[in-house]
Image (cartoon, rainbow, N blue to C red):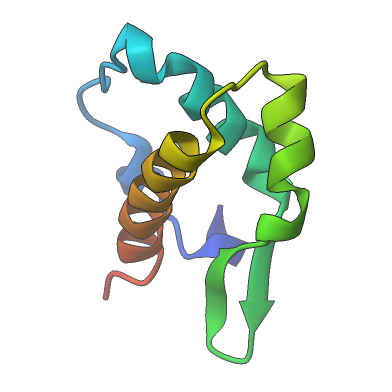
Length: 84
């Protein structure tokens, strides 16, 4: 967790509900957990190069909508990671 800027307090709290229609994309986002790009300033975002393959594995049909949903999750994750 520390490598990505998380503390144990970051994962405590209420569970987050995931709507059923977004669940497949959430599974793609979770599968991308090892695909974060990093630089001198830390984590910068997901490596989108492997996204088509991961989406195919998870049976995502609408890749355009899935990418939009993933970008929302990515932005929220980055905000948490870089929270001071």
